[in-house]
Image (cartoon, rainbow, N blue to C red; front, top):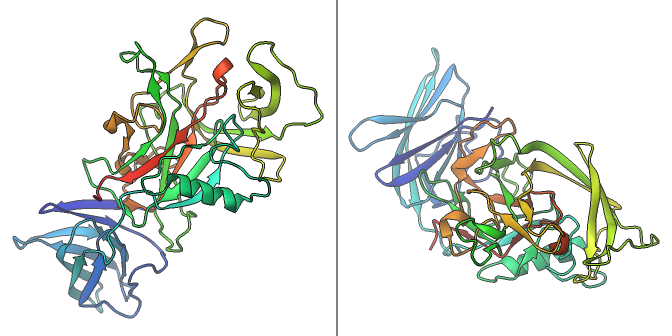
Length: 399
C-alpha cells in the first residue's frame, strides 16, 4: 500500500507522498540531487535517491533547529499551496557509503495565475436518462469527443450550463489547471448541482436531492491522464449498512421495434431501457411524456453500458402513493447535487475523506482528477429516474 504523510509548518501546508516506482513529472532526480529546486506552488516536485541503501530519510529542517521526517522511502513527492523557501535534508543510511545532503526547495508564484474553476473535462460517460442528449445537447453526427467538449464548455470557468449524468453510474471526470492541494482541516473544492428543498420541507431537507458520489485521483505516473488509482470520498453514508459497495449495473439500448408500454398517466413507455444489476435485480428506465428524445447516448455504438461503484439507498418517498409526486431526501454530507447551492458547506469536499477500495483512509497530498457519478438506482414515477446534475466546480484554495 502506498503511504502518505502531510505536515503543516508555520502556516505553510507542505504535502508529502511516499511513492514507489513513479515516473517523471516535475524534476526527477536520477543522477544526483540538486542543491536548489524552484517550483511553482500547487505543482509537484518528485524526488528520488540517486543511490540504493539500507534505508532512507527525507526531512524538513525547522527554524528552531529540529527536523521533521517526511519520508522513509527512496522516493518522495513534495507539494506546497503557498510560496516560501523550505530547507530539506536527505540521508542515505548505508554502512559502506552513507550520504547526508541538504538542499532547498523554493516555492514561487505561478507565471500565469491559476483559475479557481474547472478547466478540463476528461470524460463524459452518462448512463441513460431523461436529460441525456439534452444536457448537453446532442447534434446528429456528434462523437464522444464532441460531447466531451460540449460538457467542458458547459462547465468551464464561471459557466453554469447544467450537465446531466443520467441514472446510476453515469459519470464525468474533470480537473483544474493545477493540482488541488489537500489542506488539513479545510474543505478543498466545491461542486454545485441543482438540488433544492421543496417549500415547507426545509427542516426535512427534502425536495429534489439526487446525490452523486465523488472520486479523486492523483496523477502519479505524470502522463496527464486520469488512469491512476481512484479513491472514493467517503460521505455520510459510506459506512451505512444500506450502502452497497462494489455494485454494478448494465443498461441495454432500447429496442426501437418494440411497441411502447404506456402507463396511461405519466409514462409513454414503462419498459423503455432494460437493466439488470449485480444483485440479481432488473428493471427499466422508463420514458415520460415531457422528454421525448432518446434517453440512450446517441453518440455511442455500444448496445449495452455497464457502470459500477458504491450504491446509496433509495431516498425517494411517493407522497400520494400514485407516482405523481415524490420528495427526495438529502443525505447529511459528502455528495454532489444533494443540498441547495446556497449551503456552501454542504456542497464542499475534503480530500481528507479519501478511502481506498478496502475502505481504508488514504493520505493524498492533492488531486489532479475528480469524478462524479450518480449514486442511486431509483425511478420516481412522474419525475423519472434519479440523476445527478452538476453546473460548476471550484478550488477553494485559489481566489
